[in-house]
Image (cartoon, rainbow, N blue to C red):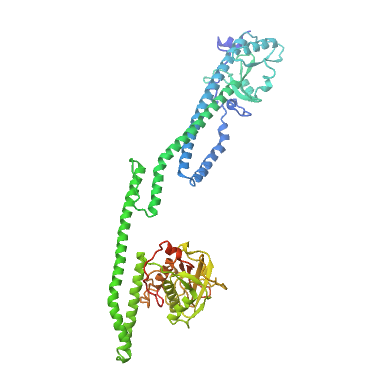
Length: 623
C-alpha cells in the first residue's frame, strides 16, 4: 500500500523537511515551538527555540557591577604596583574569558548542529524509506521490522513507530523499551507532531519534523518526531549526545587552562610593566623625600621623552628654583642678622656715654629746676630701657647665629631663685616654695635670665602675690631634646598676656617631694603662677614671639618685647622647655622644665656661644 501523500502528490516526499525556521530558532506566531525546560543543565541540554536561559542569568549580571565597584574601592587603599597588576590581570581575564566563551559557544553550536542535522536528516530519510512500502494499516510486526530497519542506520539512535493496525488498534513498536517509549517523549513534542497545520502558500505541508534536547537521568539526548503525510505511522527517535558533551567538556577544560595561563602571563607582564613604570616614580619619591629633608641640590637624571621624563624635568626645575629662592632668603636673613648685630654693637659706644651722662643727671636731680626734673627722669629711664634693648638684641643675635654656649656649674636651685628675687627686691611680692638641697648642673647666669623674665612678667602683668614652686620629676634627661612641651593641663607653662589680660597656666601640683641632690636622669620643674586675669586663648600661641603685642591699642611697652623669647631660647639651649596655660582658679602659670644635668649638651658640642646676653631684668615679652 502506498501512502496517500505519494498517491496524491505524484511523487512528493512523504515527510515535510525539518523545521524551515532552523533548529535553534523560534517558530513564528501560529507555529508553536516545541519547547520544554531541560532538567539538570549541561551544555547540550537546552531545548531548541527556548530563550529562557538569558532571563535566569539576569540577576547574576546585575551583581557583577556591584562587585566591581567594591573591588575598585578596595584598590584605592593599595599600592600602585598592585593596582597595575590587578588591572592588567582583570583586563587579561576579561579578554581571555570573553574569547574562551565565544570560542566555546561557536564550537558548541557547530558540534551540536552538525550532529543534530546529521541525525535529523538520517531519521527523515529512514522514516521515508522504511514506511514507503508499509500499508496504511500495518501490522505490529511490520512496524517492528520497520523500526529495527531504521535503528540499524549509522547514526545509532532508537526508534519508536506508532500506527493503527487493520483491526483499528493502536500499535507501538520500539527498538529500546527502556530508553524510548511514548511516555519518554515530551508532551509538547507529541502535540507539535500531531498538530495539523493548514496548507497555504507559506506552508506546503500539514506536518513537520520537530526536535528537542532533553536529559534522561544525567545523560543528554536529542528527541525528534514526525508524522507521515497522507496517512501512515508516526515516528520518534532518540539519540544520545554523551559523546558530544564529553567533547565539549574537554574543550571547556582546554579553554579554562588557556585562560589561566593567559592570566598568569598577564600578571607577569603587568609586573614587568609596573616595574618599568614605577621605577621613575620611586626615584621621584626618593628625590622628593630628600628635598623635604633639606637637600636642595637633589636632582633627577632624565632620560626619554615620555610623560615621566617631563615630570622629572618639572621636578628638577622646581627644585632648582626652590634652591635659588632659599639661598636668596637665607642671604637676606643673614644680612638682617648682621645688620642687627652690627647696629647693636655700634650703639653700645654712644650708649655708654649717654648712660654715664644720665647717671650724673640722676644724681643731680635734687638740685635741678623742678620744671626740668621730670624731663631728666624721662631721659634716665629711656636710656636704661634703650640699653636693655641693645643688650637683648645682641643676645638674640647670638642665638640666631648659633654662637651661644653653656657655662655649667652645680647650682642649688633654691638659692639661685632666692638670689634672683633678692637682687631685684621682689622678696615681699613673691612666695617661694622650694626645698633646699636640689642641685642641678646648669648655667647659673642663663637660669637667672629665665627666672628674672618669668617672675618679672608675672609681677608686671599678673600682680602679686606670685608663687614660685621648685620640684623635681623623674623623666627626660638632657638628651631628650628641646622643643618638647609639657601638657598644659598638668604643668601649664607659657607667657603672660596683654596688659590686664589672662595668662594660661596649669594647676600647681598638690604635694610633691623634692629629690635630694642632683638626679642626672631627672627633670627640674619650676612653676611661676600669678593671680592676674590670665592670657586670652588667641594670645597663647604667640606669647613667646619677638616683639609680639597682645593688644594693638598698646603700641608702647615698658619692656623690650624680647624677654620671654630670650627666656625660651635659654631654656632650649639647656635642652628644656617653657610652656604656658591658664590656671583653672585664675591667673597664668609659666612652667620651666630643665634637665637636672645639661652636661651631655656641652659634651656633644651643644649649641650656643659666649656668655653674652641681657639679664632680662624686669619682665619683657608678650603680656
